[in-house]
Image (cartoon, rainbow, N blue to C red; front, side, top):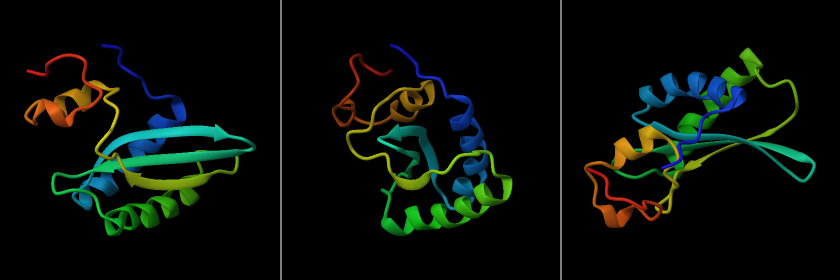
Length: 116
């Protein structure tokens, strides 16, 4: 199993987003800062036991956007996207595997080994 590590930007954003997510009953699944064409995208993927709704995405997006504007950890322009980790979520971090430990293995598309 290869575990992905956060880059500096992703780690900073994760640390800023985590308290807001926790307050809203959400978990931060992943943070990605990616360039597509000429634009940069900051993507925050969230999860919760009962499933993520568009209202959950908005509930995190607005205060996170305000906090990012205030703290300004990213000096270049970017688009902020908040969305569900989705049913076909990738398991890239140790915390992802731990979160799936008590769930059915069939819901874990990217698992290549049994989670115990």
